[in-house]
Length: 398
Image (cartoon, rainbow, N blue to C red):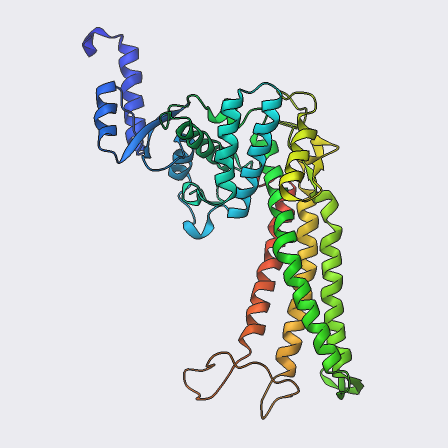
C-alpha cells in the first residue's frame, strides 16, 4: 500500500512515532528486511519490549529494558554501577526461585537452564553484562530486569536458542516467575548486605579488634599522662588507652550483629504489594529456605510482607549501626594521629608507620596517611546514613 492509501490519522500517528523514536535516539525498524540487514553486521541485534524495538550489542546478554535504562539514565558512569554484591544476590534469588518454581510445575529443562545461568551470575562470570548504574527507578525495576534478561538470554543460549528471542526462556514469564521488582529488590539488598557483613565486615573488624587488644597488652606497662580538654590530667597506661579502642570496636561489632535478625527477613513472595499475588502457597517459605541453603545464613521469609515491601527499617537499622562504628573509627584514628604528632614538636607518644613520602617540598616529612584515610571513609559512611533515612520514607523509591 502507498502511504496515500492509508487513513490520514494512521499516517499521522506513524509519522509522529517515527519522529519520536528518532528524537530519542532509538531504533524503530519497521521491515523484516531492514532488521535482517542490520543484524547481519554482527554488531548488534534487535530486541523489543512493550515500548518498541532497540539495538542491543550482539555480544551482550541483556535486552531491551536494560538498553532503555542506559538511554534514559546516562548518569554517573562506571564507578556508580549497581554494586556487584547486589547482582550476585539477585543471582542467588533467581536460582532459588527457579528451583522452587520447578517444584510447582515449571518445565524442568527451563528451570535447570535458568539455575545454570544464575550460577554464572553468582560466580561473577557475567559481570560485563550488568551495565546499569544506581540512578534509576526507586524500586530497582531496571536492575531486576537486567538480571532477568541476562539470565534468560544465557539460558536460551544454553538450550541452543537465539538470543533475544525470549524463547524458550522468557525473562518475565520464567526467570521472574512469581516475583516482582517490589519484592526481589528488597530481598537482594538484604542478601547482599548480610553476606557482606558476614564475609567482609565482621572478619575485618575482628582483625582490627585483635590487633588493638594485642597492642593494649604490649603497652600495659607504659605509664603516660592522661589528658582532658587536651590538657594534662592524671596518669594511666598506654595499654588502658588502647584497651578502650579495642572495646569500641567490640561494641561496634555487637551493634552490627544485633541488626542481623531483621536483615534475615526476606520480602520474596510478597510480589507487587505484599499480598503474594501470582505465587503458590509455600513459595515464599521455600525460596527463603533455598537462599539460606545457598548462603549458609539463617534467612527466613518475612513474617509481614507489607512491612518488608513498604519500609526499609532493617536497612536503616544496619546503616545506623555502621554510622556508630564509623564514629568510633574516626575517634580512634584521630586520637592515634594526635598522639603521633611530631616527631620533634608534637606529642610524639606514638611512632606511626612510615609508608610513603609526605611532602613535595619538605624532604623526609612523613604523614599519618592511614589515619587520615580512615577518617575519610568514616565521613563517607556517616554521609551515607542521611539518605538512608530519606529513602526509608519512600521519597526515593516506589
